[in-house]
Amino acid sequence: MALPADMNPARLQGRRGLLDNLNSWRREADGASAAGTMDRFQHDAFELISGPRAQRAFDIASENPRVRDLYGRNTWGQCALLARRLVEAGVTFVTVNMIGWDNHSNLRPFVG
Image 1 (cartoon, rainbow, N blue to C red):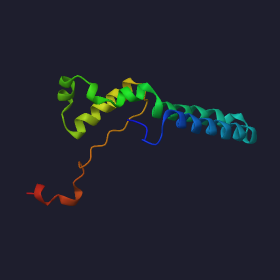
Image 2: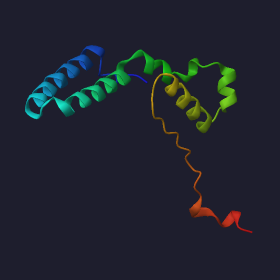
Image 3: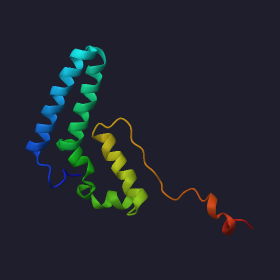
Image 4: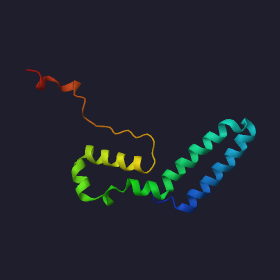
């Protein structure tokens, strides 16, 4: 996981500063109750984009090759491995999708 080529860390920080200014105006207009919650979510989002913990969690290539083999060198196995790594990094909710499990449109081959 990396920033887009045209987004360097200084530019990201500039955007964060702009967002902080807008948030302070919003707090003045709305009161501080809901704004504090949004500030925490925005902080977490910026940390996910730019923080080293997220970068390490998404780097499944750094995982022990034997562990990767145990999970399975396929989309499902590597997604499950990534989910485990995200939870270990502090993510509190992870969804792993298994594309293609639902076969309602093509049941004929499975019916006797």
